[in-house]
Length: 211
Image 1: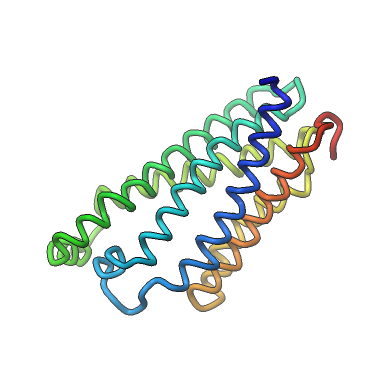
Image 2: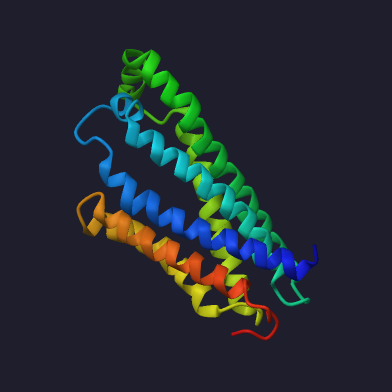
């Protein structure tokens, strides 16, 4: 497969990843049980569907990040390389987090819900919380940096990269302004739309010189 062919395949993966992001947050998440313990939520069927879709989205974004970097013009520079590394590692860490939630946490919730509720009720930040913060922080920082690098490049649609960045910042703002889960759903819809747009620009047969 040629590099341009790989970029187009990665673009299709990014489109699918953006769609899955919207589905996870705007379609499935509202069906999670409300006003119950995390153990009950993790043992529920909607949680199973949500984490399965979220893990798939992470895989697609991981693949898509490679294509975004390769689609840059030939003078990528050190900033683009560092941004790609952060986005790739962040996507991998996010996949690991979603995978753990899907298989380990859900199984724990079904087998030992009392123990999980006690752990969840414990005060302070746990090591799993620290790990999740590192994973999500690296993911967000990496993709913002990669999209900022894309804006500097002439290879892909700049508006798409801007939409992804705006989506990352809009999600927590909408989460605080609107009742859950609609605030996060709206913010992630914007974010997912940015990835879809960015992926579509990667599927174009003419990558160089695209603004």
